[in-house]
Image (cartoon, rainbow, N blue to C red; front, side, top):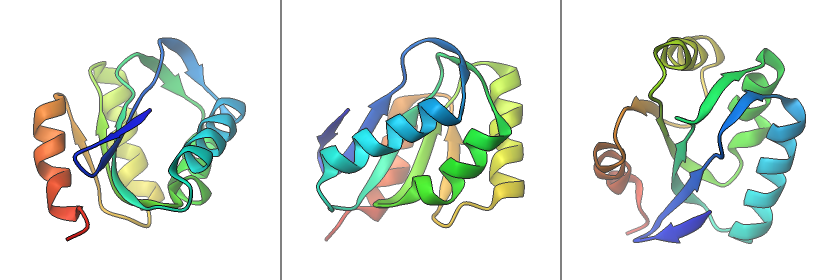
Length: 115
């Protein structure tokens, strides 16, 4: 977890399932790290095999605090399908887009940086 050039970046460790417990810990740690400052945010979930519905629902709502825009990095076709479904169904409260590479995601997020 770090902020570089006005963009928060979070890289998830390899895991089989991102469940509600992991989601709560991740959001808590991010909020403590950001200290009430909002940023466009990159979340690299390419090493996560699957997420639970409960975790996705939480991340789409309460989990979006201090996030101006979300770019999610995915690599696994199944995860990409689930993430697309998440964006369509859960309708996150901030702009959210999926990417397969970090550079494209960072370029897209740059438009949301504080001026």
